[in-house]
Image 1 (tube, rainbow, N blue to C red):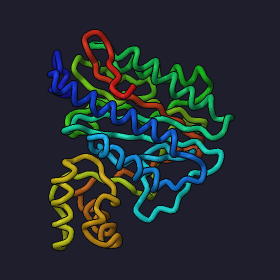
Image 2 (image 1 turned 90 degrees about the vertical axis):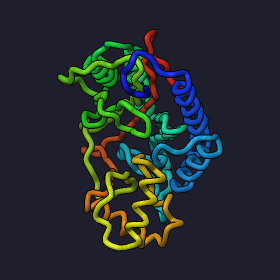
Image 3 (image 1 turned 120 degrees about the horizontal axis):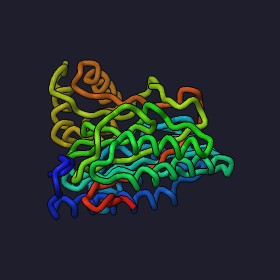
Image 4 (image 1 turned 30 degrees about the vertical axis):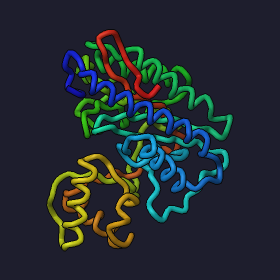
Length: 305
């Protein structure tokens, strides 16, 4: 059973995970081609999300394009005017699923050679973590490897962001892989699937919420104050099944003003979970590297490599 920590995955589950991983790999390859200074971020998000569909999968969450000190959760709102700045550091985080079986990976694109060592720190930390993704290995040991590699190269890991166990239709499945050593005593188990994602920064090593929310996910049916909100919530529940979504994906339901107000109300009433855009607390630059890994008896299988 997917993500259950059982002794083995079925061949059908593994194939769906691998299909999703191949899609994400191709989408990130396209990202490396289209993300350039001057490109509109909304065009990048929509192009990559559309490619996921073209390749036979569905987005597992809205494409994240997080620039410089923005660490995560920035996905263009429908009326976004943001462009990729000159000399910037751009994290592109993409998820795809096949029948709920998820692949999640990210790359950092660097348009300033002065920032390349920061990108390398995240990538080296990811390599060190994946090598340890074997049944019975403690998550504390994996986190220590991530922290040690980032600090070895002169940067700080972000302490309040982490990798995560994934289950079918569930992006965050109950276990985390912190980017710093902790007293967390869980171990990785055979048959589990993880998104492993080190974040390295030139800042103080933590992120804070901003006031901007670009991404939501369904929690439960409650709090709708009118017919439009009830209809919207019903669609969200049936279409996304708890996976994160963007307001851009609901524009066939009404005006942007209507949709945005409804999402904000439903989040305030506890029907939706909101994901604030996250920034490095000290204003430092942030780099990210991420792969999805199946923990097999003989070691890690990277679905997005």
